[in-house]
Length: 186
Image (tube, rainbow, N blue to C red; front, side):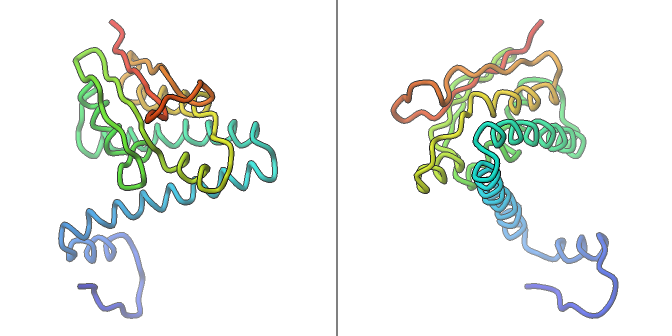
């Protein structure tokens, strides 16, 4: 299944050639594995920053990193797939970028998708699962994810706004981690 390696330069052309030889299903699994690894890194990074510098600094830095990285992810995905700037594109990038990657441990759903509104509910997420398993206080997602989702929405179209309708530290709701609403302004 894998190409035999030999001495010589390793560059993108070589890697592309090897990836093109893999079955499509294996490529899909590799993409998922890479995004799952991203969430492992995210959980460790935030936990160590929190341990050494406190939850306020971890929250602030996490929001800054996510805000910057999601813009890059969205812009690259839109360019790669020649996507538009409408609510269907927003729904697509929500499904296909790291913030909502289901194999990484997200259980979520769209509760509404129209030409003007996209609503989603997250039932479980990898950060919440990790923090609960390690007896850590839940991260203040309302503070961290707000800038992330707003940056994601604005990367699709500057007229889209993101609003948190529920997230920690709001009082818990059984079976719901957070919920978000995206609206295309006129």
